[in-house]
Length: 368
Image (cartoon, rainbow, N blue to C red):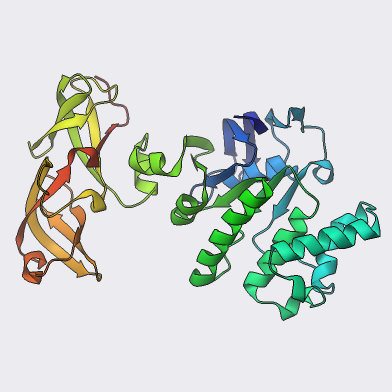
């Protein structure tokens, strides 16, 4: 992996209004490749925007360093860093035309007028706004304004483009369309994108890798599918997608597999063990969509039996809440069946979890 951006041991704290310190970043290190779409994902206050501002130069670190293509950025002001930012509110100039908004940074930099015209024309064509160059910002839709903000940030050919929740102000349909366009544009340009969002679905759809932050630290850095299927701790498991987390203990190990006893004494056999030792307290992660109402021929899995307390028909599927003594409510998403009464509230049900639908996480503070 050829690094375009390296963050080494970055720390940043702020004075809290009530006294004391807010530790926004705690010794964070991260390497980002050329032409990578990396998303910083986490709840409000996790440190993702502070990290973005530190990269852009709008925030000074208390400790650590940021390198872009091997060059330290610590003493370089924001306007001299090879990065640009697309803000949540776009920050466009309402009194200038679309073309002048896009060309502004090139004009300030003293770029030749013919070169400006060419680069602005190319960029407007790329974002589908060639016919809108003379319009004012107030004459554009939200999606069009977002494209202008992108064109303005990209026309200067930055090494890294920073995007601070740029889609949050758009409606759902337009947001999905812009997700596709942003991802396609990033690959076409070959520029590294660092995208900040609190929307997990958005992160999963768009990213090459996702860094999940909480409490100023990276909890996990991984590809979207690995992050979803194999979260490293309870926070990531709960934050990414819907999950069932059942308390249990490893009671036997055999090679790469182990048996786990749940708190209601049910034993799940043949679970993927990882590095968990016998006697380790764990949380058993089962995603609702991993559950099936019946195993297909030639497959095997664990049985989860109980009584349906809630049932919601959502077209192709039923979303169920199953109650059983000694365990938290169990959520399942199962394919709709012609016999609808089978999934009615109050009915007993046997659900099955294929072996690869079970992921074990060492409980916090767990020791073998």
